Length: 326
Image 1 (spheres, rainbow, N blue to C red):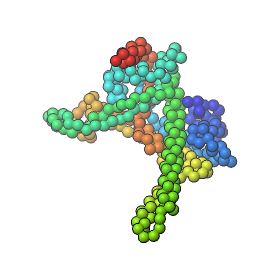
Image 2 (image 1 turned 30 degrees about the horizontal axis):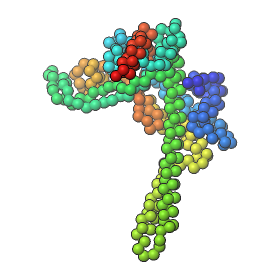
Image 3 (image 1 turned 60 degrees about the horizontal axis):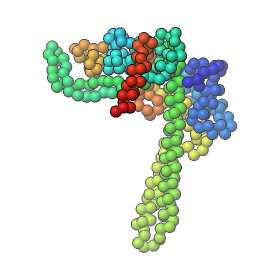
């Protein structure tokens, strides 16, 4: 996560004080190192990179404050109660994370660990009971909300460190999107071109004259279709210039590829979404949903985990031995 660490260049707003020139080089390393063969690549990328970094700064500053993840907080904080099945599950998520353990082991005087918690929000419709007026009504369609696939990343010793880590994760996630999008585009173009070459070869060897017109027409139709698909491909990277233009465009237009939507849902203690006007007792759970590129949105939260909540390492080693013995 040290990519954005170091001295700050004048005129750039980089998360964690990173040097803009160094960040541009990181972008090239993480997208396509051959871009360095183009004269002026660094100059062309500086402003787009700075634009993305400024935007990420604004996104992360809007993230709700860190929540305390402890047994007492599970009883008192609606967010903690919603994010985890029970206190044991909460402690297992953090205690089973190698980065959290390594951080706490390396900082024995630190009483708590700050980190970023990522989750997937799942909603499932089913029949249940609900309070309608003063009466309990059965077989009412309800939406059960749960949070799964918990991932604790980039632990640190303060909220500033956690926010910096979140900015770095979002930035690097965008670079992964660029790389994957470019790779998929090149793979698709290569596949279409190979198929087009093959069909053209078949057409050139197809016999002419009566009796072969139907086959030639069929092959020509395939060629026309493949040429159309190539022409309509949403991203064509036929040259290094095309690749550089693509990287610069994505980084220069971060609002198209990054979002951090803050919202709130009202839930019962059983994790049922309560609609407006519901008389059932519930509580508001603020959510911050991060989206990078075309990926599925993930719920992200800044969290604090006390060292006192850490489960003994032996518990996990014993459980692992048990599974290996089965």
